[in-house]
Image (cartoon, rainbow, N blue to C red; front, side, top):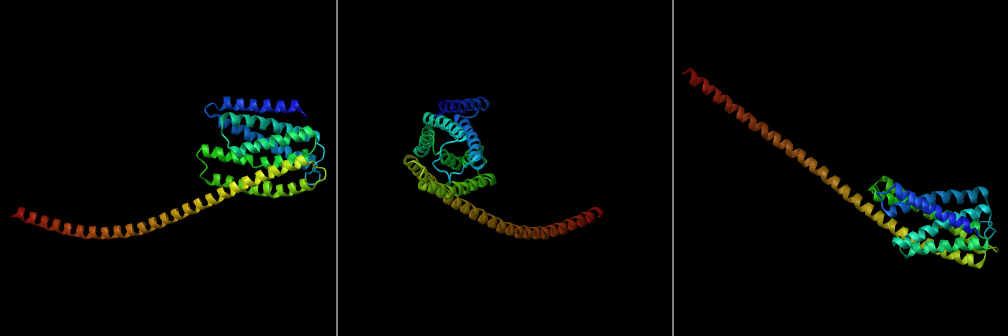
Length: 275
């Protein structure tokens, strides 16, 4: 097991956190930790995508194979981050049992792959599928903090997150899970770990589906209220127009009467003066 690489990864993510704390001193600890999470998501997605699609092989055909050097390096980088984030979450009490269980499962799965020296390819595949939606999840949180979530940008981030999670983590993840279970090379303990992570993915998917239904209902209700408001304003505008025309016509009649009286007064004044 590459203990030194894991330790260096842990120190590296912690130093990045300290750098963010120094740079964004006016922000809270969670803001800076989520910046580290966002950075890790981008880095590990690019790294595992290179490992799987360029360096190879694919987890669909080589599940349970021995780890390559690049796979081992990717797992060490990811494990160091999960150690850092797990400690941070426990210290600040910011996450619930479900997220802590996800972190614990990820740590155990990566540790097993590094200790046994096998199943690195499917472990990298699981990491890629799990972390590909993480930058969007952090972006959503940052938009909330900046007051920009209730906008077109916030809706776009939510849609992209839901589509990516459903297609990659559930769709592609189901195929990879089947390949792992049917592979003769994959050990029993790694198969059990795959079952646990796949079950967690479905728990997250149910929560996301509930959120999607709730937000859709709220959006539809808001659209109905805005439609009724615009209709009421349109009717009020028409009524106001008619009232304005009526008052204008009444004002013209009164103005004519006043002008007539003024003319009579001026004529009498002239007559009196001459007299």
